[in-house]
Image 1 (spheres, rainbow, N blue to C red):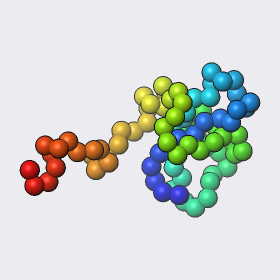
Image 2 (cartoon, helix red, strand yellow):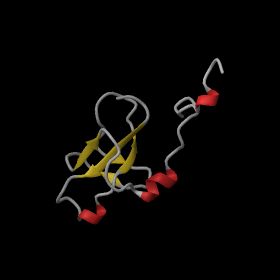
Image 3 (tube, rainbow, N blue to C red):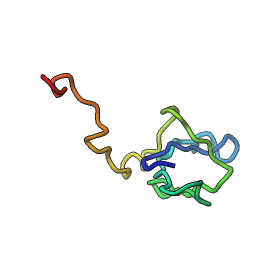
Image 4 (tube, rainbow, N blue to C red):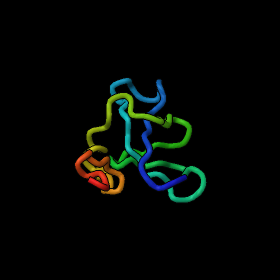
Length: 86
């Protein structure tokens, strides 16, 4: 796995629909998936009860959004006025 942030939410039926928010989880730095994932909000997610999302969909976890690190400037999109050669 690569460094960064993964989007994860509990599978249907594991928690109530109102609790199936999308959590932000630090991507594991080593190979494989750890025995338990811990979201930035502190929610522990055991193996086999979550789905990985490839794109943003569903209601985000507000606590994760407030506590997750901001992207670095190298990841931020550039405005046309900031593009090289202008």
